[in-house]
Length: 102
Image (cartoon, rainbow, N blue to C red; front, side, top):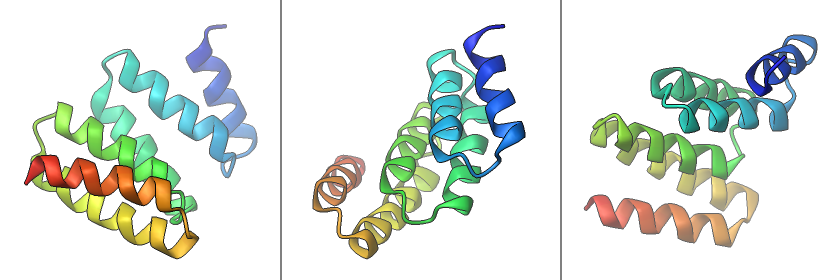
């Protein structure tokens, strides 16, 4: 069983497992399965809307897909999530990514 299978099994047993879903989304992105990665990040965001780093990595993956408008909106939503959760570091990273997009 490879890493993807293990992560999918963990999610199957516990769909709200934030760490497993984040790991799956990152593994998919690393393997070049960008659309599936975005879907997993979006599922993670739906389950935990204050998890700011999911927005950051989702935005980066959207950029890799040349979906700049969607990336920009994802970063904006992530900034709001970081503000809700009081995560100044994540907010700064998200703002930096948004600023680069212009």
